Length: 412
Image 1 (cartoon, rainbow, N blue to C red):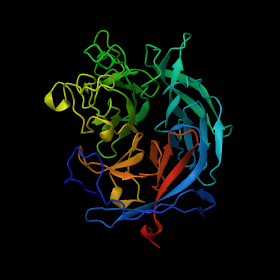
Image 2 (image 1 turned 135 degrees about the horizontal axis):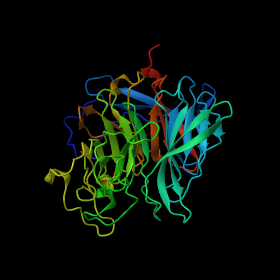
Image 3 (image 1 turned 60 degrees about the horizontal axis):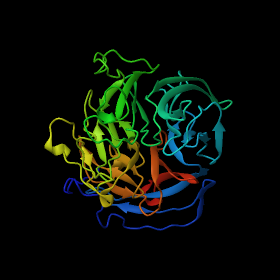
Image 4 (image 1 turned 90 degrees about the horizontal axis):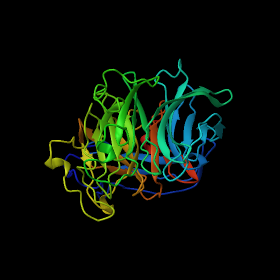
């Protein structure tokens, strides 16, 4: 495994010399279009250097937001924020479209957002989706729903709305909206809808609604009896944790089963957190960022209070240290042996894919993959069969990319 234990934890991820070689060229690879083949050597601290190449799997996705691999099928479902659900064949690069997708409010940061497959998808063909939906006044709220997937059509049917993060607001920002499954439950992380009242009454500190919170539901959308606030008057019983700003990434640790998430701070102060049942993660009463409007740092850093749960990793204030995250995956494949157990998180502002070495809940500063390519990384996933890393960017004409070991890294 890569180790960065000697690096300061607040390092923004920049360390010189971690790319030994980079070049680009146009080639053909297994009949697919390869826009760029960049070989990058990464120092592995005691291990052989790991290099990767970038293959373009498919082209022309319109502002994709999330993806999910179909088990046994090899194809990939990709949501587009404008409201389309695509199905991509990574062998041919062909992109199809599914019907039956819910109507979405594709304004601001809203639209069709996350996608995840039922944990027993081969027996239960449910696809779970989140999206920004609107009421009859044009106000919006984050929705969680599920629908049956018929690949023969291809189409969704029998759509069920399982949860709405009410109330509806005029705001079109901070929907959050990542989905994970664990221990027979579905967890979803929401955003604070960009509320700017930074006092104790802030929406992320208000247990009567799940904006700025994570929720836990059974797979059919009912509230489990052992949720932490189920017996608290005036609290939304679905809430599992709260005090979050804008959750844009969630993943389940493959060994511990803990739910990890990454959320945007304000002008810096972005965080990686490990979710705790009933935990208050402090926003906006504790944080490391800066108020966009005043330029003033938030007055109570996490490390000065025991009232709120501190992040396992965070970035400091300001644009230089800004890491607005999107998408998260633990690397569990075999293709990149030195990266086993590492954490991948996309970066929307500095436009790279962060690779974080972990030691328990200790997180080292990231190595920057895909740096200099100009892609706002929106989501990534580890291929279940090949162990390659698949990446989508937040762009109106985004490619679906694949990171593979370079040829000198593959055994003959």
